Length: 407
Image 1 (tube, rainbow, N blue to C red):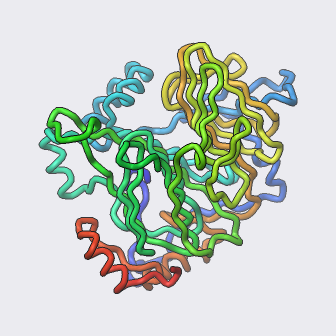
Image 2 (cartoon, rainbow, N blue to C red; image 1 turned 135 degrees about the vertical axis):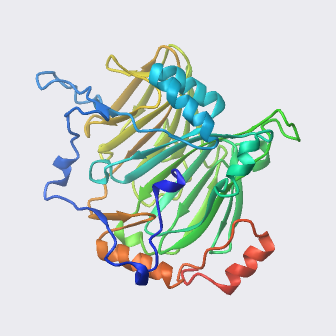
């Protein structure tokens, strides 16, 4: 769920003059060697890796490089533009204001051969105010959410910190989930898109404090992670599951830190997420002057951290908010300190040593499979898109009339 313009669904095959452009990333003969991150510097990231002469402790997971992705203005756009201008003068002040008022989305476009099984992480921070007249003009042509669209071949993990989503899909499943009391603790959706599914995700917009308050906007903040599937599972039956609470996403508390285990294991507690590969997804919260530690299995060659608020320090290197850290693929313990406090999302997992081909909203193993996915979508095998404004009764009737063949 990046900015809606970030991904587009190709027109029907008959209207295209040539084959679709497919971004393909294959697996080199020495894939494990390719997982070692480049140390080159350019405008998009700052290299903070140790010099060749530095001694690396085998037990400590080190920083490979740090990258900062662009933040796009949306919901409301004018907030995002203001934050962009402030961020140019003072990036950390811009980050604090975004955390308070919203107005931006940040797609972290990963490089799958180096970050497998993680494809993309998107951080959304938005605000919908009932008193904003421009909002009502904008939503006549720019819906407040993501109308029905197709996926195949991967998993979306959507985790809410504020607000929530109203979900409907071509399998006939309706779900309401998020971070508010009305969501009954179900803050995460695990959607295995399998052989193909259409779904819509529209923001569940209610005043933050409940009730009707013209002065109170609806805050929305979430992560969506795209997680690759092994080839043997790409054409399985689609599945969606809501997660939340101590039995499904347990919280590990230690001195001045708190970790929500969204997937995998941390501190002796394991998530109930139905992961089909070896991964960990952890939401870490650190108070000022605290230390956070995580034991990393040897199989987790990929390790990534996105700093949402505050800052973290690793081996003396301070990483400010809105930066993404890529770690080297060796070392069995990660030690993070924070003098001012921090909030971050940590991803780790075993790479899937298979080719990957991705275009738009499909993730498969080859360009031919991508073309087949879009052909199946256009042949209505995944169902037919519906208008996000229709009622639940009309949507259910639509799904019965145009059923998914993968149900």
